[in-house]
Amino acid sequence: MGRLTTHVLDTANGCPGEGIKIKLYLLGGDGSRSLIRDAVTNSDGRTAEPLLDEADFKAGRYELEFAAGDYFQNRGAKLPDPMFLDVVPIRFGIADEHAHYHVPLLISPYGYSTYRGS
Image (cartoon, rainbow, N blue to C red; front, side):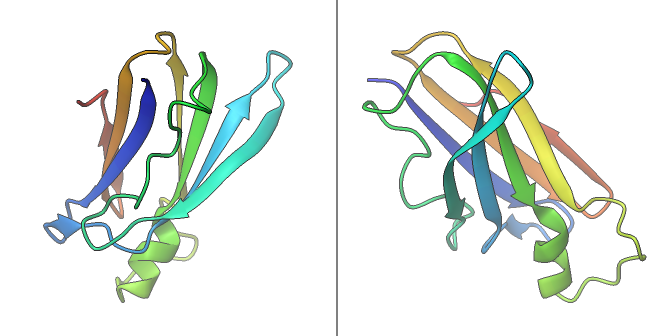
């Protein structure tokens, strides 16, 4: 019954990160990446469905990419060229195929943090 979810919070503006493009990759032992899902966050900063649900949820190494630079540009933020943060990658492992893995992102144009949520 495992699943993978995410949530993006815009800490610069104090709101959910709506409209952020996300890509999910499965990482191979040889350093390869295979795109397995893409999504866009909704008005609550979440994806409409889990990024991985029971059927596709497998142990392994993964990478989430968040298009943070596009998001802040679309909000009209004054950003330097090049931007300090553009695409934010988060690499993580799934060990327990029966658990809920929640990978939230707290983002601003100049910093971010993540953790394993619930």
